Length: 77
Image (cartoon, rainbow, N blue to C red; front, side, top):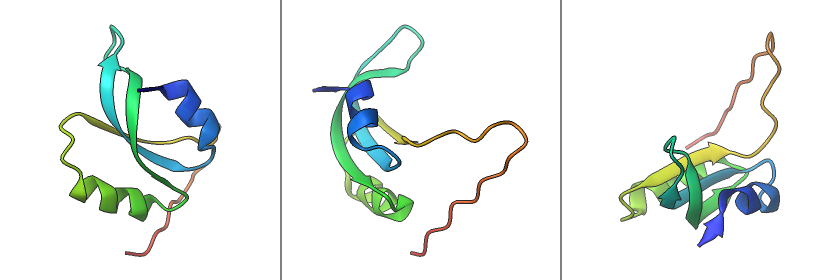
């Protein structure tokens, strides 16, 4: 098990796919098992299709754009 904050620090500016082991009272992941990480969102989608984990979370660990800015994620599959 790994704490979500450690995952965010270790895999900065990457897409992360994890199996959720424990959630807080709001349903947010606290402890997780890493399934995949990549700069490419497509790689984590591939891992998502292959995983047998039942409770997963998929997120980006980089900066969230400020209000008024738009972001486009492009990935070729």
